[in-house]
Image 1 (cartoon, rainbow, N blue to C red):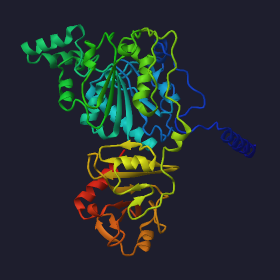
Image 2 (spheres, rainbow, N blue to C red):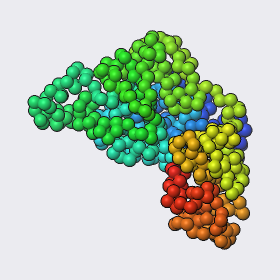
Image 3 (cartoon, rainbow, N blue to C red):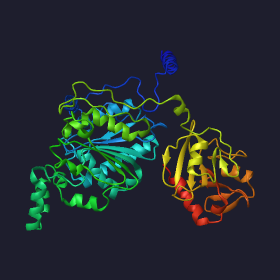
Image 4 (cartoon, rainbow, N blue to C red):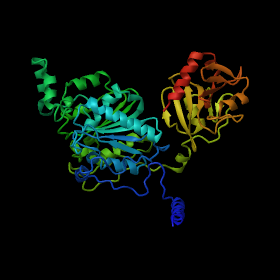
Length: 480
């Protein structure tokens, strides 16, 4: 009987695979419902640790969306009450979505964000580390609402989170704190008269809402995170605010003019959008801005319709633009890319940025002012081009690959060091774990723990400068 069940199970699995029922990445077999109304949030409050599409730990990031999205709820909310709309919207559009409920009091699981934000940031730190570990991703993108735009700033500045985050979308942020009911004015006045006023007020709230005084303009918490930044230069921020915000007052506290911050006022894009503070979490206009921020290559025009605080009577279509077959085919480098004296595939040492984009015809999945990062079809490894300088005149000085199909003489990334030494008996050691395959060769091989970790080609000028070479290799290794 058990043998028969196993045969039936295998047959079902084969049929399911043939029909394409087993979905890959974050793509669901059937789109999840996306409710654009507050009623779903009320219903979700009864299930504080779940949101549609969130926390599927089998989800693996795709080439199109290489970073998981971590949802960070607002004050007194939870994963369940805050993200009934944006979680399924992200999942339907191909993202791996994860979220936590943090800052809860013992015995009261339905309300979060109540403990001091310094403490809650430790919960976020542990959660992001788990997401990275389970998915294999190098970075995440954050989506925060209300407190979810303030608490993570401690994680980014003081808990080592900055290198682990690429993009940060913020619903109703408050960079300078709130002056709700003149609390900011009163706090500043009290602190001016009584030096111990702020610590005393924080102690009064400690038993019920320890985070509440930290939102007030001029709080010690905000002073510390603002002094540390206020932004992290490597992170791309998108702020989405509403003129009808009754909790962040004035609403312009959520607008920060900085090089790496894009600000959107919902009513500037859609005058009939009447969302207030909580309603942004189920606002279709905000939803489209969210998708555009996380995947700008497939951004769509932001819709405008009547949006009421309680919900949207006739929600518009929200989603990412369809990807053309031609664009999809050009996403990654060829699986087999021969390594020459000055090139790995089409990526050639000495090429300018313009020449690289023209000749390679593949859009980099990651860019910095000193490097381009490329994926490889069907392989987990990456190819990185490092430029000699940040200026437009900078040329490729190093090309590095970790893709297993790339190599010569049967030596590829993940080959054993024994195979490497057999293939290159005259290799010269340049530094710990770094070899030049011959006295005049431009090819470099990195080894660690008995395995080849990468193969690279470098310009003669770079090879003559060991310090610059090590710097270029570090840039290549850190490219994301």
